Length: 173
Image 1 (cartoon, rainbow, N blue to C red):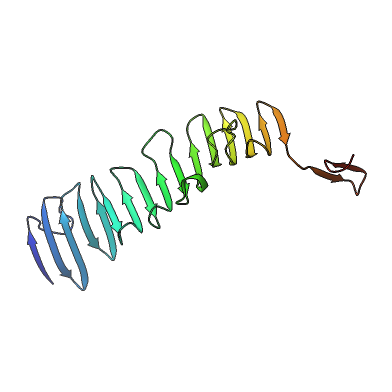
Image 2: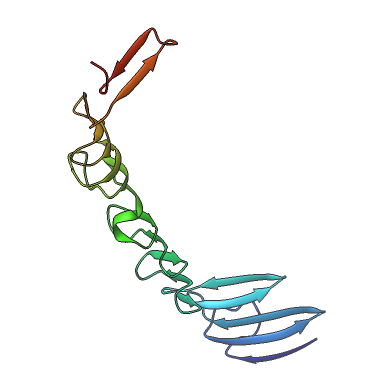
């Protein structure tokens, strides 16, 4: 049994300092105090900190306790819990990203659009304070469900139901 220490008298000590030991063939390591420390004991690693920042390979993986966020693949996947509207964003091209958001009154999944009424190309799916909203398309061609109304606009439309029992076509008169 051997150890090197300063300010601590064992691995369990909460006082400021460090402890490095080989305690009956078990390696131990503890740097810090009772609130912020790195500790390795009984083959387990414990990290406690009032602030934690990690940046691996210049942005491949970033974790921030200060910003309540994490990102992966050079910000291609972002998890942000810093606001009252926590967000997960997938993709690095702004108008093609898929975003998932949630608050106490809304849940949203969208790409390109920012609301059910948006005419921008993309999709929108939301539970907006118990009002279900759905929109896919752009200003010209779309299917939309909003305020309990279904809207459909298309330059071309084909419907064949019941093995031909019902057929509708914008190309046939």
